[in-house]
Image 1 (cartoon, one colour):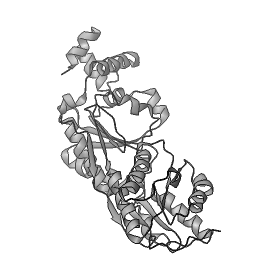
Image 2 (cartoon, rainbow, N blue to C red; image 1 turned 90 degrees about the horizontal axis):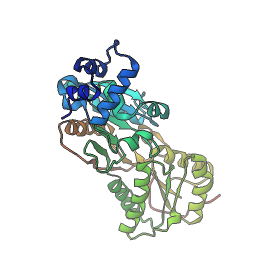
Image 3 (cartoon, helix red, strand yellow; image 1 turned 45 degrees about the vertical axis):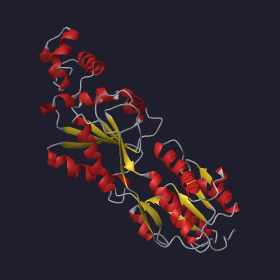
Image 4 (cartoon, rainbow, N blue to C red; image 1 turned 90 degrees about the vertical axis):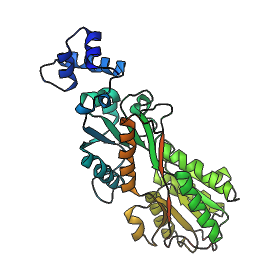
Length: 334
Protein backbone atom coordinates (compact mmCIF):
# COMPACT_ATOMS: atom_id res chain seq x y z
CA UNK A 1 0.00 0.00 0.00
CA UNK A 2 1.45 3.35 -1.08
CA UNK A 3 1.60 5.87 1.75
CA UNK A 4 2.05 9.64 1.98
CA UNK A 5 5.55 8.95 3.31
CA UNK A 6 6.39 6.99 0.14
CA UNK A 7 5.32 9.94 -2.01
CA UNK A 8 7.31 12.36 0.13
CA UNK A 9 10.48 10.25 -0.17
CA UNK A 10 10.01 9.94 -3.92
CA UNK A 11 9.87 13.72 -4.30
CA UNK A 12 12.34 14.47 -1.49
CA UNK A 13 9.85 16.71 0.33
CA UNK A 14 8.17 16.55 3.73
CA UNK A 15 5.26 14.27 4.52
CA UNK A 16 3.31 17.32 5.69
CA UNK A 17 3.68 19.02 2.32
CA UNK A 18 2.31 15.94 0.56
CA UNK A 19 -0.61 15.77 2.98
CA UNK A 20 -1.40 19.46 2.45
CA UNK A 21 -1.29 19.07 -1.33
CA UNK A 22 -3.57 16.04 -1.31
CA UNK A 23 -6.06 17.86 0.91
CA UNK A 24 -6.11 21.12 -1.04
CA UNK A 25 -4.28 23.37 1.43
CA UNK A 26 -3.87 26.90 0.02
CA UNK A 27 -0.20 27.27 1.07
CA UNK A 28 1.06 24.76 -1.53
CA UNK A 29 1.87 26.19 -4.96
CA UNK A 30 -0.09 24.93 -7.95
CA UNK A 31 3.05 23.58 -9.64
CA UNK A 32 4.06 21.60 -6.56
CA UNK A 33 0.51 20.37 -5.98
CA UNK A 34 0.32 19.13 -9.56
CA UNK A 35 3.67 17.37 -9.23
CA UNK A 36 2.55 15.67 -6.00
CA UNK A 37 -0.79 14.59 -7.48
CA UNK A 38 0.87 13.21 -10.62
CA UNK A 39 3.42 11.30 -8.54
CA UNK A 40 0.72 9.92 -6.25
CA UNK A 41 -1.25 8.65 -9.26
CA UNK A 42 1.89 7.22 -10.85
CA UNK A 43 2.71 5.32 -7.65
CA UNK A 44 -0.84 3.98 -7.30
CA UNK A 45 -1.90 5.96 -4.22
CA UNK A 46 -5.66 5.80 -3.59
CA UNK A 47 -8.01 7.40 -1.09
CA UNK A 48 -9.63 4.02 -0.46
CA UNK A 49 -6.38 2.80 1.07
CA UNK A 50 -6.88 5.37 3.82
CA UNK A 51 -10.61 5.21 4.56
CA UNK A 52 -10.57 7.58 7.49
CA UNK A 53 -9.69 10.37 5.02
CA UNK A 54 -12.13 9.35 2.29
CA UNK A 55 -15.85 9.83 2.89
CA UNK A 56 -16.68 11.65 -0.34
CA UNK A 57 -18.12 10.07 -3.48
CA UNK A 58 -18.80 11.58 -6.86
CA UNK A 59 -21.40 10.97 -9.54
CA UNK A 60 -20.09 12.14 -12.91
CA UNK A 61 -22.79 12.64 -15.53
CA UNK A 62 -22.47 13.27 -19.26
CA UNK A 63 -24.90 13.01 -22.21
CA UNK A 64 -27.74 12.49 -19.76
CA UNK A 65 -30.26 14.67 -17.89
CA UNK A 66 -30.82 14.33 -14.16
CA UNK A 67 -32.48 17.52 -12.89
CA UNK A 68 -36.17 16.59 -13.15
CA UNK A 69 -38.04 13.44 -12.00
CA UNK A 70 -38.77 12.57 -15.64
CA UNK A 71 -35.06 12.65 -16.56
CA UNK A 72 -33.35 9.29 -16.99
CA UNK A 73 -30.54 10.02 -14.54
CA UNK A 74 -32.71 11.47 -11.76
CA UNK A 75 -33.80 8.20 -10.11
CA UNK A 76 -30.35 6.66 -10.52
CA UNK A 77 -28.81 9.44 -8.47
CA UNK A 78 -31.63 9.25 -5.92
CA UNK A 79 -31.06 5.50 -5.51
CA UNK A 80 -27.29 5.98 -5.16
CA UNK A 81 -27.76 8.63 -2.48
CA UNK A 82 -30.28 6.51 -0.58
CA UNK A 83 -27.52 3.95 -0.04
CA UNK A 84 -24.45 6.17 0.21
CA UNK A 85 -25.55 8.92 2.58
CA UNK A 86 -26.83 6.66 5.39
CA UNK A 87 -23.44 4.94 5.16
CA UNK A 88 -21.74 8.23 6.02
CA UNK A 89 -20.68 9.39 2.56
CA UNK A 90 -21.10 12.84 1.07
CA UNK A 91 -22.25 12.54 -2.56
CA UNK A 92 -21.54 15.24 -5.12
CA UNK A 93 -22.91 15.33 -8.68
CA UNK A 94 -20.45 16.74 -11.21
CA UNK A 95 -21.25 17.43 -14.90
CA UNK A 96 -18.58 15.91 -17.13
CA UNK A 97 -17.43 17.11 -20.53
CA UNK A 98 -14.51 16.68 -22.93
CA UNK A 99 -12.75 19.85 -21.73
CA UNK A 100 -12.72 18.70 -18.12
CA UNK A 101 -11.41 15.26 -19.09
CA UNK A 102 -8.62 16.81 -21.13
CA UNK A 103 -7.60 19.19 -18.34
CA UNK A 104 -7.28 16.64 -15.54
CA UNK A 105 -6.79 12.83 -15.69
CA UNK A 106 -9.37 10.76 -13.81
CA UNK A 107 -7.16 9.50 -10.95
CA UNK A 108 -5.63 12.94 -10.48
CA UNK A 109 -9.06 14.59 -10.34
CA UNK A 110 -10.25 12.11 -7.73
CA UNK A 111 -7.20 12.70 -5.52
CA UNK A 112 -7.40 16.45 -5.95
CA UNK A 113 -11.03 16.55 -4.76
CA UNK A 114 -10.69 13.88 -2.08
CA UNK A 115 -13.16 11.44 -3.68
CA UNK A 116 -12.92 7.80 -2.64
CA UNK A 117 -14.82 6.50 -5.68
CA UNK A 118 -17.16 7.44 -8.49
CA UNK A 119 -20.30 6.43 -10.36
CA UNK A 120 -20.03 7.46 -14.01
CA UNK A 121 -23.19 7.94 -16.09
CA UNK A 122 -23.50 8.54 -19.82
CA UNK A 123 -19.92 8.15 -21.04
CA UNK A 124 -19.37 7.43 -24.74
CA UNK A 125 -16.72 5.19 -26.22
CA UNK A 126 -14.74 8.24 -27.40
CA UNK A 127 -14.34 9.70 -23.90
CA UNK A 128 -10.75 10.22 -22.74
CA UNK A 129 -11.54 9.14 -19.20
CA UNK A 130 -12.95 5.86 -20.47
CA UNK A 131 -9.50 5.03 -21.84
CA UNK A 132 -7.80 6.21 -18.66
CA UNK A 133 -10.05 3.99 -16.57
CA UNK A 134 -8.37 0.96 -18.10
CA UNK A 135 -5.44 1.56 -15.74
CA UNK A 136 -7.04 3.73 -13.02
CA UNK A 137 -6.61 2.92 -9.32
CA UNK A 138 -9.55 4.89 -7.94
CA UNK A 139 -12.69 2.70 -7.79
CA UNK A 140 -15.23 3.48 -10.49
CA UNK A 141 -18.62 2.01 -11.38
CA UNK A 142 -19.79 2.71 -14.92
CA UNK A 143 -23.36 2.57 -16.12
CA UNK A 144 -23.49 0.66 -19.42
CA UNK A 145 -19.72 0.74 -20.00
CA UNK A 146 -17.33 -2.15 -19.54
CA UNK A 147 -13.62 -1.87 -18.72
CA UNK A 148 -11.67 -5.09 -19.14
CA UNK A 149 -9.09 -6.44 -16.71
CA UNK A 150 -9.11 -3.59 -14.18
CA UNK A 151 -10.17 -4.74 -10.68
CA UNK A 152 -10.94 -1.14 -9.72
CA UNK A 153 -13.83 -0.83 -12.19
CA UNK A 154 -17.28 -2.40 -12.50
CA UNK A 155 -19.84 -2.44 -15.30
CA UNK A 156 -23.36 -1.91 -13.96
CA UNK A 157 -26.69 -1.88 -15.78
CA UNK A 158 -29.71 -3.86 -16.85
CA UNK A 159 -29.31 -7.17 -18.68
CA UNK A 160 -29.73 -5.91 -22.26
CA UNK A 161 -29.64 -9.41 -23.74
CA UNK A 162 -32.45 -10.53 -21.44
CA UNK A 163 -34.43 -7.38 -22.23
CA UNK A 164 -34.15 -7.89 -25.97
CA UNK A 165 -35.10 -11.56 -25.59
CA UNK A 166 -38.24 -10.50 -23.73
CA UNK A 167 -39.17 -7.97 -26.41
CA UNK A 168 -38.65 -10.34 -29.36
CA UNK A 169 -40.36 -13.26 -27.60
CA UNK A 170 -43.37 -11.04 -26.82
CA UNK A 171 -43.72 -10.02 -30.46
CA UNK A 172 -43.28 -13.60 -31.65
CA UNK A 173 -46.02 -14.75 -29.25
CA UNK A 174 -48.35 -12.21 -30.88
CA UNK A 175 -47.61 -13.68 -34.31
CA UNK A 176 -44.94 -11.32 -35.65
CA UNK A 177 -42.38 -13.01 -37.87
CA UNK A 178 -40.55 -10.06 -39.40
CA UNK A 179 -39.25 -7.62 -36.80
CA UNK A 180 -37.12 -4.52 -37.38
CA UNK A 181 -34.82 -2.53 -35.12
CA UNK A 182 -33.99 1.18 -34.91
CA UNK A 183 -31.12 2.47 -32.81
CA UNK A 184 -29.30 5.62 -31.89
CA UNK A 185 -25.69 5.91 -33.03
CA UNK A 186 -23.43 2.98 -32.19
CA UNK A 187 -20.84 5.17 -30.49
CA UNK A 188 -21.82 3.93 -27.05
CA UNK A 189 -21.36 0.55 -25.41
CA UNK A 190 -25.06 0.25 -24.52
CA UNK A 191 -26.24 0.87 -28.09
CA UNK A 192 -23.74 -1.65 -29.41
CA UNK A 193 -24.85 -4.15 -26.78
CA UNK A 194 -28.54 -3.79 -27.58
CA UNK A 195 -27.88 -3.91 -31.33
CA UNK A 196 -26.02 -7.21 -30.97
CA UNK A 197 -28.63 -8.54 -28.52
CA UNK A 198 -31.43 -7.85 -31.01
CA UNK A 199 -29.97 -10.18 -33.64
CA UNK A 200 -29.14 -12.79 -31.01
CA UNK A 201 -32.77 -12.69 -29.87
CA UNK A 202 -34.02 -13.10 -33.46
CA UNK A 203 -31.91 -16.21 -33.92
CA UNK A 204 -32.96 -17.56 -30.53
CA UNK A 205 -36.61 -17.23 -31.59
CA UNK A 206 -36.02 -18.74 -35.07
CA UNK A 207 -36.85 -15.47 -36.83
CA UNK A 208 -35.18 -13.88 -39.88
CA UNK A 209 -31.99 -12.07 -38.88
CA UNK A 210 -31.11 -10.21 -42.08
CA UNK A 211 -28.69 -7.34 -41.21
CA UNK A 212 -30.92 -4.99 -43.22
CA UNK A 213 -33.60 -5.39 -40.54
CA UNK A 214 -31.71 -2.87 -38.38
CA UNK A 215 -30.84 0.78 -38.86
CA UNK A 216 -28.90 3.17 -36.64
CA UNK A 217 -28.00 6.84 -36.62
CA UNK A 218 -27.11 9.60 -34.19
CA UNK A 219 -29.91 11.76 -35.59
CA UNK A 220 -33.60 10.92 -35.21
CA UNK A 221 -34.24 12.55 -38.58
CA UNK A 222 -32.11 9.95 -40.35
CA UNK A 223 -33.89 7.13 -38.57
CA UNK A 224 -37.26 8.53 -39.66
CA UNK A 225 -36.36 9.55 -43.21
CA UNK A 226 -34.02 6.70 -44.16
CA UNK A 227 -34.15 3.66 -41.90
CA UNK A 228 -37.86 3.57 -41.03
CA UNK A 229 -39.00 3.60 -44.69
CA UNK A 230 -36.41 0.90 -45.46
CA UNK A 231 -37.87 -1.32 -42.74
CA UNK A 232 -41.43 -0.74 -43.91
CA UNK A 233 -40.41 -1.67 -47.46
CA UNK A 234 -39.18 -4.98 -46.05
CA UNK A 235 -42.70 -5.62 -44.68
CA UNK A 236 -41.77 -5.61 -41.01
CA UNK A 237 -44.83 -5.78 -38.77
CA UNK A 238 -43.07 -4.64 -35.61
CA UNK A 239 -40.13 -2.44 -34.67
CA UNK A 240 -38.07 -2.45 -31.47
CA UNK A 241 -36.23 0.78 -30.65
CA UNK A 242 -33.04 1.14 -28.64
CA UNK A 243 -34.70 3.63 -26.27
CA UNK A 244 -38.09 5.14 -25.49
CA UNK A 245 -37.51 8.62 -26.90
CA UNK A 246 -36.68 7.16 -30.30
CA UNK A 247 -39.69 4.83 -30.08
CA UNK A 248 -41.98 7.76 -29.25
CA UNK A 249 -40.64 9.76 -32.19
CA UNK A 250 -41.22 6.79 -34.49
CA UNK A 251 -44.79 6.42 -33.20
CA UNK A 252 -45.57 10.09 -33.85
CA UNK A 253 -44.07 9.91 -37.34
CA UNK A 254 -46.02 6.77 -38.18
CA UNK A 255 -49.29 8.34 -37.04
CA UNK A 256 -48.58 11.36 -39.25
CA UNK A 257 -48.15 8.98 -42.21
CA UNK A 258 -51.41 7.19 -41.46
CA UNK A 259 -49.72 4.07 -40.09
CA UNK A 260 -51.79 2.95 -37.14
CA UNK A 261 -50.12 1.79 -33.93
CA UNK A 262 -50.50 -1.13 -33.19
CA UNK A 263 -53.00 -2.24 -35.90
CA UNK A 264 -50.51 -1.72 -38.74
CA UNK A 265 -47.23 -1.67 -36.84
CA UNK A 266 -46.27 -2.67 -33.31
CA UNK A 267 -43.65 -0.60 -31.47
CA UNK A 268 -41.52 -1.48 -28.43
CA UNK A 269 -39.20 0.92 -26.60
CA UNK A 270 -36.47 0.36 -24.04
CA UNK A 271 -36.05 1.96 -20.55
CA UNK A 272 -39.69 2.64 -19.49
CA UNK A 273 -39.40 6.39 -19.04
CA UNK A 274 -42.40 8.03 -17.32
CA UNK A 275 -43.68 9.29 -20.68
CA UNK A 276 -44.36 5.72 -21.87
CA UNK A 277 -47.62 5.51 -19.93
CA UNK A 278 -48.89 8.68 -21.66
CA UNK A 279 -47.92 8.20 -25.30
CA UNK A 280 -50.68 7.55 -27.85
CA UNK A 281 -51.12 4.66 -27.56
CA UNK A 282 -49.28 3.88 -24.27
CA UNK A 283 -45.96 2.25 -25.12
CA UNK A 284 -44.86 -1.32 -24.54
CA UNK A 285 -41.25 -1.21 -23.38
CA UNK A 286 -38.44 -2.91 -21.48
CA UNK A 287 -38.28 -1.50 -17.97
CA UNK A 288 -35.12 -0.49 -16.15
CA UNK A 289 -35.69 0.16 -12.45
CA UNK A 290 -33.50 3.24 -12.27
CA UNK A 291 -33.69 3.63 -8.49
CA UNK A 292 -32.44 0.07 -8.12
CA UNK A 293 -29.70 0.83 -10.65
CA UNK A 294 -28.51 3.65 -8.39
CA UNK A 295 -28.61 1.43 -5.30
CA UNK A 296 -26.70 -1.27 -7.18
CA UNK A 297 -24.15 1.33 -8.24
CA UNK A 298 -23.36 2.10 -4.60
CA UNK A 299 -23.27 -1.61 -3.71
CA UNK A 300 -20.75 -2.25 -6.48
CA UNK A 301 -18.68 0.82 -5.61
CA UNK A 302 -18.64 -0.08 -1.91
CA UNK A 303 -17.42 -3.56 -2.83
CA UNK A 304 -14.64 -2.16 -5.01
CA UNK A 305 -13.55 0.17 -2.20
CA UNK A 306 -13.43 -2.85 0.13
CA UNK A 307 -11.14 -4.66 -2.29
CA UNK A 308 -13.79 -6.99 -3.78
CA UNK A 309 -13.17 -6.90 -7.56
CA UNK A 310 -16.74 -7.05 -8.91
CA UNK A 311 -16.56 -7.06 -12.71
CA UNK A 312 -20.23 -6.85 -13.70
CA UNK A 313 -23.50 -6.24 -11.89
CA UNK A 314 -26.66 -6.62 -14.01
CA UNK A 315 -30.28 -6.21 -12.99
CA UNK A 316 -32.99 -8.34 -14.56
CA UNK A 317 -34.96 -6.64 -17.32
CA UNK A 318 -38.75 -6.47 -17.16
CA UNK A 319 -41.25 -6.38 -20.02
CA UNK A 320 -43.99 -3.78 -19.50
CA UNK A 321 -46.85 -4.49 -21.92
CA UNK A 322 -49.10 -1.60 -22.92
CA UNK A 323 -51.11 -0.80 -26.03
CA UNK A 324 -48.43 -0.22 -28.68
CA UNK A 325 -48.15 -3.94 -29.49
CA UNK A 326 -50.75 -6.31 -30.90
CA UNK A 327 -51.12 -9.16 -33.36
CA UNK A 328 -49.90 -8.17 -36.84
CA UNK A 329 -52.17 -6.87 -39.58
CA UNK A 330 -51.30 -5.43 -42.96
CA UNK A 331 -48.71 -2.66 -42.75
CA UNK A 332 -50.07 0.51 -44.32
CA UNK A 333 -47.48 2.48 -46.29
CA UNK A 334 -48.15 6.03 -47.47
